[in-house]
Amino acid sequence: MTIFALGVNHKTASVDLREQIAFSPEQLHQALPALRAQPGVREAVIVSTCNRTEIYCHADGHDGPSADLLLGWLAGYHGVSATLLQEHSYCHTDAEAIDHLMRVASGLDSLILGEPQILGQVKQAFQFAKNQASVGGILERLFQQTFHIAKRVRSETAVGENAVSVAFAAVNLARQIFADLNQASVLLVGAGDTAELVAQHLTEIGVKRLSVANRTLMRAEAVAGMFGGQAHTLGELPELLPQADIVISSTASTLPIIGKGLIESALKQRRRKPMLLIDLAVPRDIEAQVNELNDAYLYSVDDLQGIIQENLRNREEAASQAHSMIAEQTASFISWLRTLDHVDILRDFRQQTDQLAQEQLQRARNQLAAGKPAEEVLGELTQRLTNQFLHAPTRMMREAGAKGDYQTLAIFQQIYNDND
Image 1 (cartoon, rainbow, N blue to C red):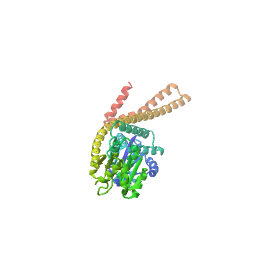
Image 2: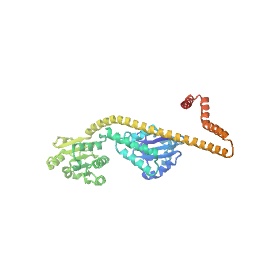
Image 3: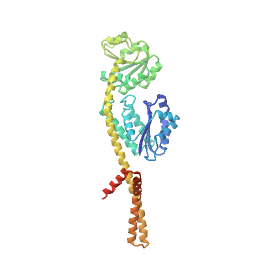
Image 4: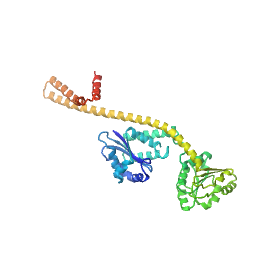
């Protein structure tokens, strides 16, 4: 049997190509049965995210598909050039495929090292395939072991502990300063992609009081609506700032929109209750002089970059430990696969020899029933069984001798020496 992992990701293909071969949930309903219909494919799981599309297959060892066949199927399904796809894809088999899946699920192959979302996406893909009856015993065990090692990597290493994106670093900083963010009031200034990501991280850690102020109210309403917040315009900042414990700003303004005077006024209304201000914009949204005020704590994107770089180094050190853990898990799974191969071969061998023995035994019974002497019947039975059992090994030994295949001859010699 063979385990395949074929696909493209953010390292090998452009966004344009990744978009072309991505699978929507609706497409997966037809794609999985179509993939299973390919010659030799027994089980299949398709993982499709914004950063990767990957096919995982368990296939017959001898008569199963080739990497070219799987790649051709993927290209044909999405109507893209097979040559182009081959230039930007990768294919791993057996131990390499298993190792790749475990690294993907553990966040070691992600755009952001150690990001946790990919584990949930792989679990979702596996469950979808299972519901479609595309998963059997081999991939079931492989993916369950993959989820096990991914959880161990998350809990036993520091690969996912430190913030490595500006948005997440900002939220992490807020969480370090405020013991209970559930009670904090957060104001996001700006409603672009960064603000949306910040809002997502904030809601994931339990922030309930969220406001979004933006130049256009419609965009503020769109972002606030996703996370149960309140939408405002930038003109309302003088009224909003005194109510905010945390201000995170990320607009595209070319000039600062929050000055020292505005924060000074807000602090007076807050009766000197401290404010945390995080400026993610370039150019800056918040005047640097705000840092001169007591009870105002301002961090710029440069401050966060230093934290991010240090955290990246920590994650990379943790990743080496994670790779060792995954290598052990991969070796364990390969050992299990080999026992399956051994069991299958032994079962087939016993079934074949038993069938031969039963055929010759029935023949001997028929001869006895016809009155043939028992001594003669037993002699013929012994001779026929010997000839049939030794036919294939004899032929293989002759072929090995003719080819000078001393390794095969040595194996046969060992087998028959052990019978002495």
